[in-house]
Length: 198
Image (cartoon, rainbow, N blue to C red; front, side, top):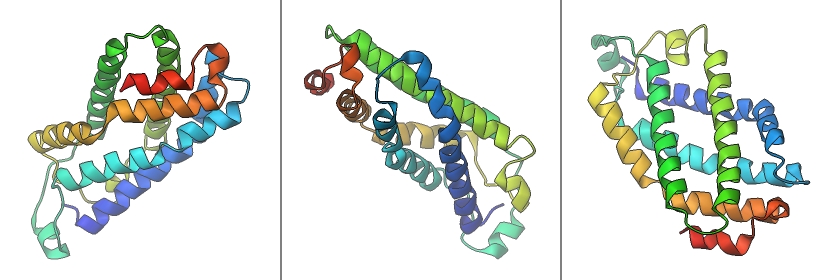
């Protein structure tokens, strides 16, 4: 079993890897032709780092998967966890929230909002695949020689609780407003419609 210190180090490492993946994955937005000012739009997406931090920190706390001290950690043996499966589950939950949100939009500008959200989802997919590629020879826990005690029940509960703490409409509205100010309104999205999403 991992100590909470080891688990924190691995979660922080995973976050950094995901942020490193953002750099090459930003190119995914080019196929959407969202704006003539891609660097301004890029800032909108980079500003979502706090959002990612909150999700990861919430999961780390709620999953209750580590020991407070080294002795307890050594005494407790846990099964190897399928991290790829956990990443797939997180992906499914996020996609479900995105679909629900997009289906709730009724304004005439919903096609443009969907265009921006789909671009964000494309970047997120790329980051996920890049992250998995970076860890194809083993995750941080493998290198540390410990496993967090992540039970399926605790993982599902933590994912549910953490996804509920996110104000998805607020997050998407802020991305919408920032995107509009970065020139996405060139394709018809206007920032005055973004607050209507909430």
